[in-house]
Length: 613
Image (cartoon, rainbow, N blue to C red):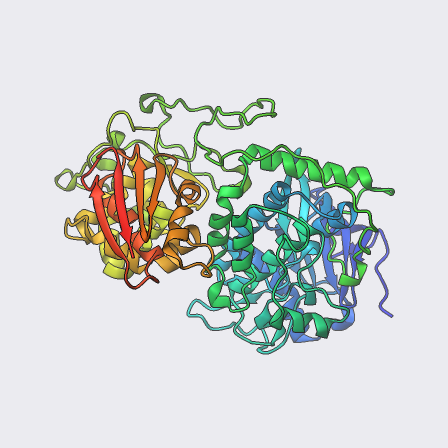
């Protein structure tokens, strides 16, 4: 039997062990103190008799390498790593709080809004990992932590110890053995359960879908008495509906879960950001999400009959406590949802006391806005409406970039001969209309994929620096509202430079790229192909992209009229993007006829489209 290190032992001549937090057959996790800095840390140490095993040692350090590559505020931070006489070690931030598994043990299940408050920042962390071609492969409640940091409860994703690191060209790095099944059986994806070697980020999406199902119902969707039986159900058995488990929810939530838990990974969301997009209409205001997490942690700690849950430890699966006996306690009560507009920085949701903002309040009048507010790189649940860019009428030629192959921050200012100022929005719309980051992100991808990186760089040369950097690094956040005037400048520049000045070309681009970029928003599940049903969903779907305009549906036999009122802020290019998006959503209907009835010109008040099949 392996011998545990005693409290007071010194590791690597700088970490003094305080207490053992947990561990397994390969090693242990200790609370430790950095003797010089005085900082409390969590120290994972591999057993000394495993130190000569090259493969185990490489895998042990994989977590440190993966986490340091991602660097995301919703992922536990790795501080140090190295070798010592006691064995290889990794040092992480020491988190105070409790795991999501412990919360489920104490509370049984969570209400929908609290579940979404947990899942959204987890998806943000996963999106960052996947962008760095890292797949977690072991997502489960034990590895999602409710950490109290500076008086605020924050989600932290743990344990990248069996993550798969993929090369930039798509190949699997040498750290992962093909065909070996890792991960807890209950949360495996079908491709993991089958032992397939080419696992990608969609496997993590399946696991998060499983976690979300468990958070809402208190049960995992594929439960069985043995690991083999569980794997069989994951591969072959359909997931039960939430209604079948006794929970009536918004149909959109059920459709989103269906897509996340699809057996065929090509039918799942293409990315964690797309999963978050699909949940956006159901997601409450950021202040409510923060309060929901605080309420959740308080409820867990209040129900503990012993001391508070220990700080982060990589506990083995066997350490998870048995489910709470029936009757299950009621989930913690949180404030009900409101429309997730995130438009006014002074808006206070019903039932919440106004709290001092960490950032300055910005007036809604463009003239009084602070120049160039920084785009928030904090986790999704802390994004605020000040994440907007400077109005376009305040951009000078010196703020624009030249299309040369050097880092954006090093590019010289554009000459005045190349200066370009797009058309301003109508005065009544300026500063009041916003677009979620999904749309400008898609626009940038279309230009890059169709016209190439050089043409895209020409477009970026016409834009203000911050906007250009967002576009070049693909950093538009799907849950952030961006000022329409700035997004419109991106679209206009792309129309002029990449589309030869033809705004009608956006219609074909949006249609051709619908499934990959906008499909998860407008058609979260591929099961419904009836055009009438899809179009009737538009009023509820609209808020996923725009915070202006209102949708009206008129319907007769095999004909639907879709009228968008108060849409005068939308330019002709935007109208064609929308038109192509709708055609992409309905392209499974072979005999569909689309006709623009009115509003096809820029800044017309209403936009009406008729669909016949």
